[in-house]
Length: 370
Image 1 (cartoon, rainbow, N blue to C red):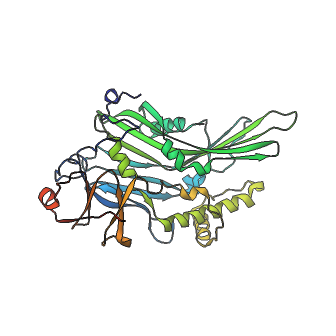
Image 2 (spheres, rainbow, N blue to C red):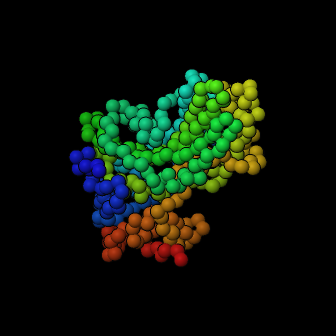
Image 3 (tube, one colour):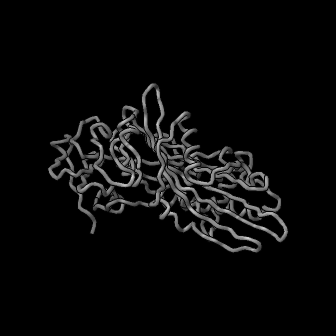
């Protein structure tokens, strides 16, 4: 069991829910009452992947937080079909950060062959823990791992990946492994704490012909992860997980990405004997592949189409005539939700909360959808 006080984390157990940290320090400079979370809708934007910028996903951030980055495209992301994620949001004072961790693909085998996919790397990681330890070192060099836990909830959500397929002279087995790493680091002389979580899909192909040695080839794809940091003593994991659970992929973007991935997968299949590049080395050719993907009629979506985040979990649906579709989904860790006249939302467990009295802004209390 983790000793959270010794680790410098607010006393929250990984496996238990707890009250959210006072948002006076987290969400607004207006010094709202404790147990009140004021949030605003934010977007993670894909600005260059298609013919016009579009939202890849939406989420709710505490009021006053600023975000930057989004979905990026380029030759350096050849291993992940030409695109990746580089997005983060920070509190007004910059002391707290939420980040989408980049998706990653790697390979390893026991017979000395190099990566089968152009642009990919060889790596020895065979568990989500090993992968996250490497991710944290790239994110914050010199960081010290403090604790690790399996994320059974994320593994259940990825259970459809788990398969075992017999093959001539062997088998192929695929499984999902998810975890979360707690770590410490120093930033500008300040003692900091952080958490990084990700789901990794592993696929092992094992073959052995009579009279030959067993041959194992392992490929792995880490879906985009979720990382957070805060000063020592202020890393409130329940608060940050409540933000994570509001992430919702844009269905239109997801379909475009599914078509893109499917087109590249088809090219890879047709050209596998020639070991041709999945994504060419020039921007013009990358653009051509994307254009073909837009018009592709994909019969079976690549499972990586669901690579961005999880579908909404741990949320409550509220009636909101001003929201698209007449409803909005917010964290279910609060009993009451309000929409303010400035377009932001407030979540609170305080039954006596009054928006004008406490925040100086009028608002309407939202009813849960039936």
